[in-house]
Amino acid sequence: ETAHISAPTLLIWGEHDIALGIELTQGLEQWVDQIEVKRLPDSGHWVQQEQPDKVNQLMLNFLQEF
Image (cartoon, rainbow, N blue to C red; front, side, top):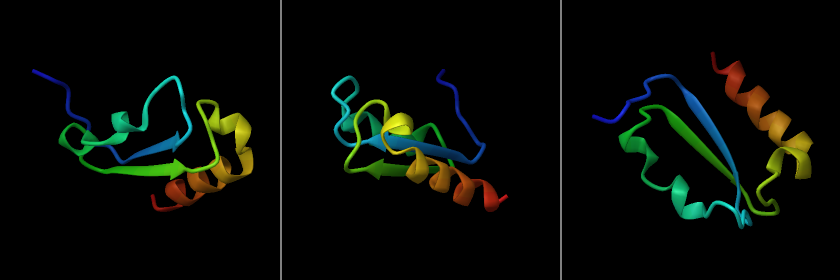
């Protein structure tokens, strides 16, 4: 049986990630109830280093919901 995540989850993904394809972000709802996926169009695999201000803002916005 696969694990199921019920905690609110934020996934930030760079659309130009050549290591992990964007298709991996599709269909996660079957394992993660409360997932919010943010895809950054001008980022690759190291999204937190490429767009730190944007990533920080997304994280702050997400955390403020709780």
